[in-house]
Image (cartoon, rainbow, N blue to C red):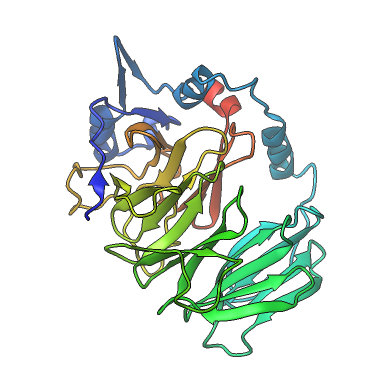
Length: 363
């Protein structure tokens, strides 16, 4: 049965913009801005309302916003404090997954293209190697951890998924997909439930207590294109998947066999671009994802901007779009902090931090 499509939003989404001096803008930039960046809502018409996203969150009764994280980041940026520095692992050795160790915030787990999944500290010390391929042809693409069950799970580029305990002992190593495992995710509420995503165009759901072989999955969720990511929602009740073309899907964790809700969205894959992955807001049913305008996408308009799009996870309607004229690249990765009041966006070598403090001052 084909996935059910969610209706396109009838309301023009609000666009959060950091204005740029008109002297630095070309006529080509100004033309689409006049068309796209006008914010319209019921009974109102505003321009450059850079606080609308956080005003919307505030209307959902979010507790008083905290800017301490933003201030700390700003201090580091100004050089009043020094970040720990790690030795680079060199070309071709990029990190593909990172998780902080909840038991020790001075440590973190990484998977990388150098062929290891390991635990290390900010001094550059490798504390434990959980998996090593010992060959340049196999590398690790994803990882997740569970403190409650004390396990580490990692996936590689040839379809294997490895489960280990926190002491580094391998529990099993199975080829669960035909091709690269792009993402592994443990359910935050039922950490025995594992989702794996692959470029073989499937997402599979596994019960870690019953894994006996590659065919022992609970459900296989076929997609039309290779899949970049599969994220469980913070309450564990939904699964969000991002393909490599133009589909974001939301599955209900209690109804895997039912057609998923589908959000059409342009985020096509490009070889030298960090894969675009949609993610959840930590406290509300909101989805955030970077846009890569595609002229072949049905609703694409001329001079479309590379925005960060925020969707209502229930209706699939686009609620807001964030855009910084000074940083007009593709925002491949976007993550809210645990409080949900600060958003970090990754674009190539740059990271943008969107905060209510910024939203209140840049109008």
